[in-house]
Image 1 (cartoon, rainbow, N blue to C red):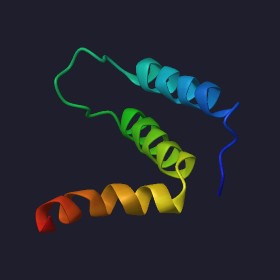
Image 2: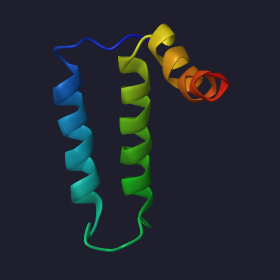
Image 3: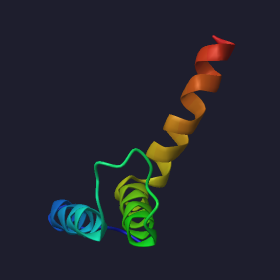
Amino acid sequence: MKIDADQFPEHCRTLINEFEDAGDCRKPLILCQAQQTALQSLELACHYASSPMQRLEINLHSWVMFMI
């Protein structure tokens, strides 16, 4: 699944608004199911915003630095 670069910021703003509207954001822990769902959706959107090659490069970076 690909995310359009023009739609990505608006999609993220919508998810952040859902997170804020779901409960009291001043609490130290996220306990509300609606907040957790919005947060997971935002994480998934960020995952799909990068290409598989970029994700592979990020995941291998620490191992390559360790080997060097």
